[in-house]
Length: 275
Image (cartoon, rainbow, N blue to C red; front, side, top):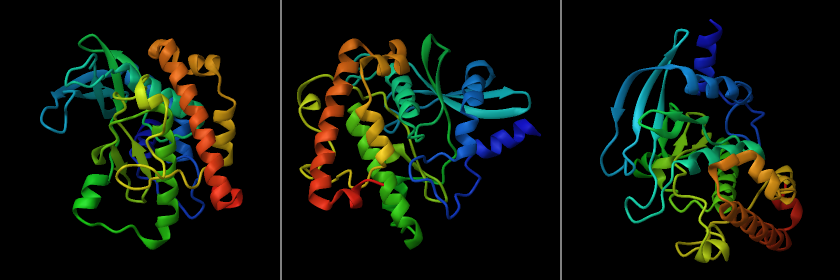
């Protein structure tokens, strides 16, 4: 029974009540069981496999079915590296993104581990979501008025996170939306850039080419956490999944975020920005 309860919680069936979290998108129960899911991903028997192909599966990952102690779940395994389609793409960035998500307490990235399948690769718990952002936009699905406040804050957190890790592949299919309008973030193998504009400016600001997309409201505790980041803290979280230059680039973007948040606070008033 305990294992089946674990499955229900991580499947996103629990409903977010009126006291919605201002930071995490995973529920407290999910976060508390994260280590168990990491262990499950690492040790459960693989009982099914299917390689994903097509225009929306550019890294050709494997969808693997796992079973252990009566629990059956699916995970996504990928081992992409190099420049398979002209872009730097690396499975190790999936692990680094998950660990930085945990370090900051964002809790928006599903449990992810390294697992050997056809060689080493990243293995992420498959999240049962209601829809992707693409479906929401294509079908013109409206956000309930009472959820708009929390949805907007989730978007600001996504922009904050992608600014920090330099994720240049946040398309509409890697926003996963639950029925209670929480947001999970997947697919981070094109992140952690170390060159050009990724060290000079942020992706999500008022100067974005396709229109302003700012980090308009951010938890004060999150800002305090990135202020305290240093090389050793990031290295301790990500291990060998990032190089020295990639860690230094994260800290460079951290400084850019702090400057940007200072600008937004001066413009809109700190009380209207930090919560």
